[in-house]
Amino acid sequence: MSKTMTMVNLLSLFILVEVVVGGFRYGVDGLRMDYYLMSCPFAEQIVKNTVNSALQNDPSLAAALVRMHFHDCFIEGCDGSVLIDSTKDNTAEKDSPGNLSLRGYKVIDDAKEQVEEQCPGIVSCADIVAMAARDAVFWAGGPVYDIPKGRKDGRRSKIEDTINLPFPTFNTSELISAFGKRGFTAQEMVALSGAHTLGVARCSTFKGRLSSADPSLDSSFAKTLSKTCSGGDNAEQPFDATPRSFDNFYFNALMRKSGVLFSDQTLYTTPRTRGIVNGYAMNQAMFFFDFQQAMVKMGTLDVKEGSNGEVRQDCRKIN
Image (cartoon, rainbow, N blue to C red; front, top):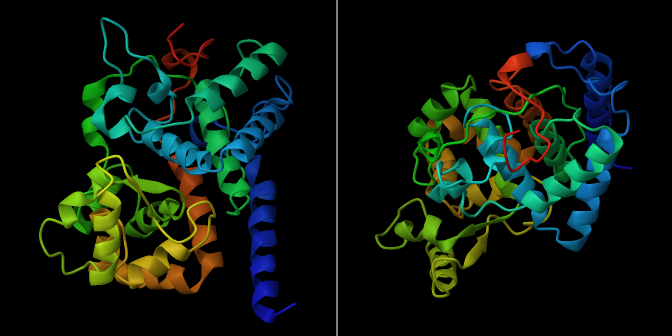
């Protein structure tokens, strides 16, 4: 085994030990690693099995589940509000333009149904979304990490709130500001952007870069993007060469001026974040470590507790 591989394995073990040893005293807003230990001991295994089964059938859902967690937490906190269906009296988050391409709702529904059979009224939809994202990252080859549980489900889901989602046209300053409002550093923002190592972008989100010469875009890659867009607005372009594997190839793509979205490439164009991109491109273990730390932090954004939330019986509607 090479020295590099040994170091990577040691770092992975260190991360796991830190999570296991430090996890049970995690006290943000009353969340705990062992929250369901007594009340629903098989909850995590049920979610993991459901996610793994879904990903075996459709590996592209890994990116979808990570994205769903992010889109949930960034609006109203991690409270499962992105899962709620619109009604005649209310247009919900999931029907906003920024959320129309979200997928994976059935995976959450399936996990919830199975958990409800075992422990009715105990496990929140918000926790299932957070666990599903974690399990999807690991399934795709990313870092193993644990998350505290105990989130309650929110009762509000309104389309107008999604104006706070970061746009694919954001520059680095706008990204730093948007993430900073939620307590993230620039480094954490870049680490979380690395989730784009999974999945694809639709032409509609990057075609604006093609209408005028974008100096941050490699000319041959611009031709690739143009060819993709010849298939229409919904044509899909992978973020990097391995869209189903969680690795650091995304950052290597940015170094080659081959970031798909403007909000991707701006991380390398801007001196303030270029060094972070370089670091992750050269050191996958460092990216994995920072990513899992940032994901745990993201999962604690504005969580609902006690009477401020509920445990939904059906993830798609308020009780």
